Length: 436
Ligand SMILES: Cc1cc2nc3c(=O)[nH]c(=O)nc-3n(C[C@H](O)[C@H](O)[C@H](O)COP(=O)(O)OP(=O)(O)OC[C@H]3O[C@@H](n4cnc5c(N)ncnc54)[C@H](O)[C@@H]3O)c2cc1C
Image 1 (cartoon, rainbow, N blue to C red):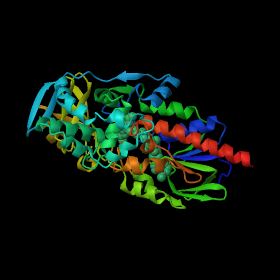
Image 2: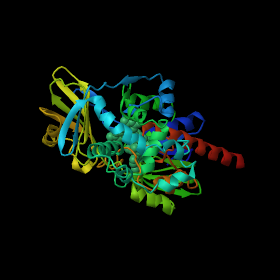
Image 3: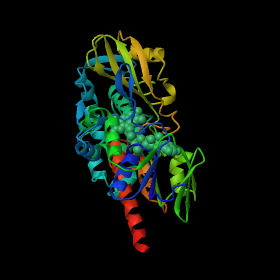
Image 4: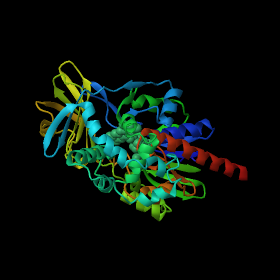
C-alpha cells in the first residue's frame, strides 16, 4: 500500500493522461491505474492490413481548442484525409450514385433547418446550459426532429443515416441537444461540423499525442491494473484492484466511460442521479471497421440505409491494387468486425462490383473497459445528468469525454474534462493543505 500518493487517476485515456500531467506538473504525486496493457483508451493505433490503423478515435481539427493546444505544445501536426470525388447512397429502396457534392447538397437545406436553433439554444458551447431554454428541447430525439422537417423520402433517409453515423448508434432516443451541441461548437455551420468529424488525422497517430502527454508527467503508470473498488475514508480514498492490492490517496479521478462506470463499486455509493445516468448509459453503441477491397477505387463515400449493419463507408487509403475503406454502423452487435462475407453482402448492395478482401476492427461495445464507442447522449442527459456527473463527491471526481462540456464525444472533450477536473482536484488539495 502506498499512502503517500496525492491523487490516483483511474484510466490512462486522454482524460486520465491529461489530468495526471496537470497534477504532477503542479507538484502533486500521482499514480495512474490502467486496466489495459496499453495507454490511450478508446483511441488505439494498431498495425493491420499492412498499415498503422486507428481502430478508435481518429479525427481532430483546429476548431477543437483543447486537442489543438496539445498538438501545438508537443509539435504534432495533422495529416489531411482524402478529397472525395464520388458518392453512393441508398434511398427509396435503391442505389444512387453521383459526384460527392451531390449527397451534401441533398442534406444541406434539411440540416440547416434541423440545426437552425443551435447558436440560440447553445450560445456558449462550453457552458451548454447557459440558455435555460435548451432544457425545453432536451427530451426531443434527433429522429423525431428529422421527421418533423417533412422531407421528401430521399432527403429524410439520407439525413437519418447521416445522424445515425454521427451518433454511431440508433437515433430514436438520441438527444437532439447533442446534435445542437456539436453544431454550436462548429459555429452553427453543419458542413464545418462534418469536416471537423472526419477530415484531419493526428500525425503519427493518436498514440503519438497520448505518449507525448505521458512523457510529460512524473506520474507512476501501472498497466494491467483494473480497479474494482473505490472507498472513501479518513485518509481520503482507498482503491482496490483486481489482484487484491490497495492503493491510497487523498483524491481519486475516475475516467471510466459512462457505460463502464458501474463496473466499479463505490463506497459510499455514487449519488442516485449519477447511478441512474450510468445505468442508462449513452447511445454510441455502434461499430467502426476497416475494410480492404480489391482494386484502386475513386475516392468515394457511401451512405447505406439507416439500419444496415454498415451504413457508411469512405475510401481512406487508395493503394496500387487495393483500397482501404473506413466503415461505421449503428449497432455494434450487428457487425462482426472479422466477417468478410457479411461486409461483402452489405457493400455490394451499395457499390457495384466491389469485392471485399479483408475486414478488421475492434468490438468496442464488447470491450469491458469501454462498453461503448464515442459518447453521444440520450435525451435528457444534458439537462438532468451532465452537471451532476461533473460534481465531485468529496474526494472522488469523474473525468472523461462522456462528462465534457464542449466537444463531448471527442478526444477534445476528454482533454477538456481532464484539464478542468485536475484544476478542481488541485484546488481542493491546496485548500486542505492550507487547513493543516
Ligand atoms: C470507434 C471510435 C471512433 C471514434 N472516433 C473519434 C474521432 O474520430 N475523433 C475524436 O475526437 N474522437 C473519436 N472517438 C472518441 C474518443 O476516442 C473518446 O471520446 C476519447 O478517446 C475518450 O477518452 P477518455 O479518456 O474520456 O475515455 P477512455 O479513452 O475510454 O479512457 C478511459 C480509460 O479507463 C480505463 N479503464 C476502464 N475501466 C477501468 C478499470 N476498472 N480500472 C482501470 N482502468 C479502467 C480504460 O481502459 C481506458 O484506458 C472515437 C471513439 C471510438 C471508440
